[in-house]
Amino acid sequence: WTEQHNNIICQKILVLEPFKAKKGSIARGQIWDKIANNLNSLQRPQFRVTKRSVRERYTLSSDKFIAKMRDKKKASGIDADLSDVEKALEEIVEKETVVEETAQNDENAKAAEMRYRALKNLGGTQKRQRKDEVENETAARAKRRRSGSDTMAYLREKNDLMQKWKMEEMQLRKQRPEAESKKEEQSKKQ
Image 1 (cartoon, rainbow, N blue to C red):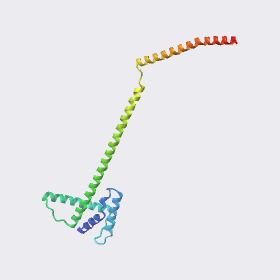
Image 2: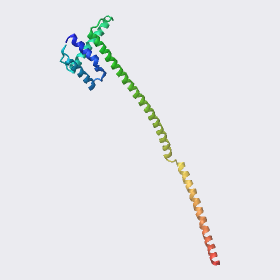
Image 3: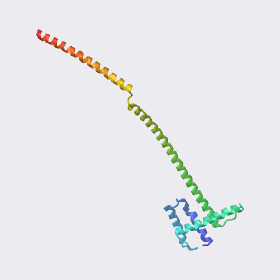
Image 4: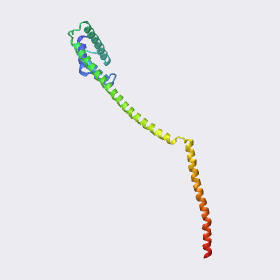
């Protein structure tokens, strides 16, 4: 691999931006495939690559570049002049980190929204449970067993009603012979 090969690979990656598609997705694989096909169609410099080899070459180059930049910052803190390939790699790495950060922020926002909805639903569920508990308590009060005094009161009321009924029945029995005797007298008179 020459510097020119690396430069062209970086330019193709910058143009097609495979890191904008989700990692491991079909779309990202298709982008790497396009990059490999574009490189293979070039006459000068000539490439014989697959999408996997292009992806691995980029990963290797970017990892080396990141390590090199980290070492330079630790050593002196002064920015050194970068070659064309290093500039392109720097731009690619920056774009890739921006895409990853926005994806992470979106994921965090979705997670926060889901937690909010879950808590909102939980609040509604708790309200519903409290309402059900109140209904169950009233139902339990209505269905509870009667105490001994309640039973005695019921029996007293029943006894009083039975006595009244019997008294009325006795009065009707007394009135019936009187009514029959009056009917007989009237029928005799006729």
